[in-house]
Image (cartoon, rainbow, N blue to C red; front, side):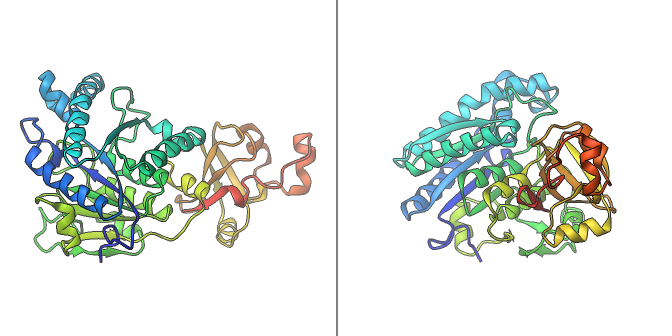
Length: 373
C-alpha cells in the first residue's frame, strides 16, 4: 500500500531527504542520484500531486568547503558556520535541478521557535500554503546557522512531520539509508524482521528503534523517525520510511518498493494537532488515575484533579499532563500561571475564589485546548 504516492490519495506530499543520501563521504553532492529523485518529483507534480522537500545536507556540504573536522559537528560554532556556507550550495543545487524540469524552487529556513510559537507557526503555514498553491516547490531546512543546542529540532525527520502539518499535507516520505522499521537492528541481528505497517505507535514499537545513524553524517536515526511518525500521526498525516539507496526512489516505491507505513490516527483539529506536535512544553501537571480516566472520557482538567505542578509558566503556555506512571497522556494550554496553579492544585472548585481572591476559571486546562497523546 502506497498512500503517499497514489494519484487519488495524498494530494500534498512532503519528501524528506537525509544527508547520507545527498552527500557522499567526501562531502560532495551525489548529483547523479539527486537527478533521479528530482525526475520522480517532477513526474509526481505533472500528475497533479503537490510536493514540498525537507532537505538535509547543508552542514555536510559546508564542512567540506571549510575543511572542518568531524563533518562540521565538532562544535556548535563549527556546525553553524558549516550550515551557513553549505546552505547556499544546497539551495543552488535544488534550484538548478528542479529548474531543468520547469519547476521553481523556494527556500525556507525555519527554527524550532518558528513552529512552536503559535503565531509564528501560522505565519510559516501561510507562506508554505501560498508557495505550494502557486506551483512552487518549497525546499525547507532547519536554520542551523542560528539554531542553538537548546532550541533546535536536532534532526529533519521531526521537522518534516511538523512541516507536513503546517503545509496541510496528507503524507510524508522519509528517504533514508534504511528501508523501514525492523524488530531490532538488522545490522546486528540477522533474524530481525521488517515491519511493513504500523497502526499504532506503542511502547513495543518505540523499543524497536536504536540510537544514532548508520552513516554518522546526519543527526537522526530510527528513534527520530519514530518520533516523527508520532507527530505526523497526531496531525492526521501518514508517514513512510523508505530506502533512498536506489535511483528513482519515489518511482520505485510507487511500483511496490518496500517501506514502513505509519498510519495516521485520523483527522485532528488544526490547533490540537499543533499542540500534539510540539516538541517543547513549559511545565507539567501530574494527575491521578481518576483524572486520567476523566480526561480520556473527554473531560476538562479541573484543579481538583491535579496532584502537583512543575515548571514556571504563564497563562496560555503549553503544559504536559502526566499520569501516575510518569507517562504524558495529554497536552494543553494552561488557564492559570504557575503560581496560581500551584495554589489551587488538588482543591475543589468551590474553594477557589477564597484561595485566589477572584472568580476562578472553569478549568485548569479546558478540553477545547487539550489534546490526548
